[in-house]
Amino acid sequence: MDDENSLIAQRREKLEALQKLGANPFGRAYETSGTIAEVREKFADGASLRAAGRITAHRDMGKSHFVDLRDSTGRIQVYIHAKEVGAEAVEMFKLVDLGDFIGVEGTCFLTKTGEPTLKVHQLALLGKSLRPLPEKWHGLQDVEARYRQRYLDLITNEQSRGVFEKRIVILREIRHFMEARGFLEVETPMLQAVAGGAAAEPFRTHHKALGLDLYLRIAPELYLKRLLVGGFNKVFELNRNFRNEGISRKHNPEFTMLEAYWAYADFEKIADLVEEMICHLAEKISETGRNAATGEAGLSNRKAEGEIRVEHWDAEGNVTRTINLTRPWRRARYRDLIREVDPEWFNYSSEKRRERCVELGVEINPRMADYEVTQQVFEKLVEEKTFDPLFVTHCPKELVPLAKQNAEDDSLVDVYELIINGQEISPGYSELNDPVTQRQRLLEQAGEETQKIDEEFLLALEHGMPSAGGFGVGIDRLTMLLTGAESIRDVILFPLLKPKR
Image (cartoon, rainbow, N blue to C red):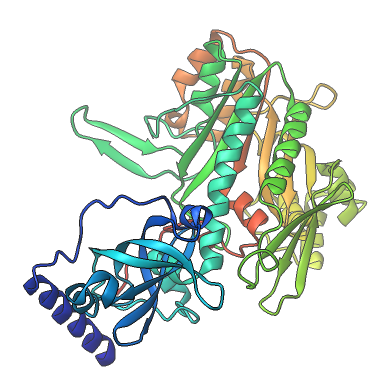
């Protein structure tokens, strides 16, 4: 800590020295020839180009200096010599540190080793760094510091930055994919009078002007369905949801979802659409990770001979898991999957099922309803052990109160739950559009807390909603899948953390 404080003090002294020289260490607008990647594309011997970025390496040779200039798109070397920029500029440059931002205008040339370089004849200071950056090759060793100071993680960790660049591609391609199929992107309220559309604990707030208690939304579903009532046949929203629940490797209180509804479709057409979309996304970010970029552990999406596979690697470059996304994906009924765990499960009494849970190593508590006991078996012995894509269909109606009942067995609903890599990636339904049955389901779910029922939604439903299919996709978990990230915190730029003590 003393060494760090000493370095900070030195940088502040340099800041004061620059100001005494009449320089502005924090710069102004600076016109460039593009990003550093674009500058490298335009590079031609003798051409004059302008670039700006952060100094990440500096080789001092007295009257001349070689500097690595970097932005999010890449790196370029610049050469600064007193003969080109003048002795005054060189003296000023000697007060510049690693991590500072500069702008340069220079002439393109190749060094003896063939390195594209800009010979600088004009130099501008654009931003002074008063604290030293983490050492590049070691970066932030403290995992929590990587999340708390994400900006430093992005500067020093190419692999981490690559994950977020892929997330950006995923979101952009989802929009293109949905719009190309006639879906309209819409926006629905994040502040809601009733927290509906899912069974979850909401965050509460209060609007002073109206004297109204409100909730941050837990799901956009009930508002998107209002749009089906209003005549929009295909809608989607990339939305932020909030749930006042635990934090884990798979959960963050604030998360991103894709949610969409398609009039006159059913859960099977929705499953086809989601399968096509995820494969499309995997192809769009293919050939990434160790082989294509940094040489660090990560992921590679490969498409060869009609196959799409996602490979996860460890730090030594060994493949730890391969997920086969090749279509078509398996579809199986919920009860059939439970029978694969125990063929006699649905012949047992309630008491016998609880005894079997003990034998199977599945933790339950005495307050669980029978369907919840079965769901625990599903989550622990089916979901967590399933890595290749699996559409789990025809689930018990108690699990999905907003889905349409199956025509052949009214104890089931027409839904799927897409499992990949041991976790749910997407639920999809044939949507319930019967307002009488919907009210009954919501009353059963609410129990004594009838104030939790969204009467405005039921009113809309009574005006008539077309049969429809709908789905959600957790963007954070999807990004984890497609980038090989092990924690949801690795794919959220600023995850929620406890305050630093």
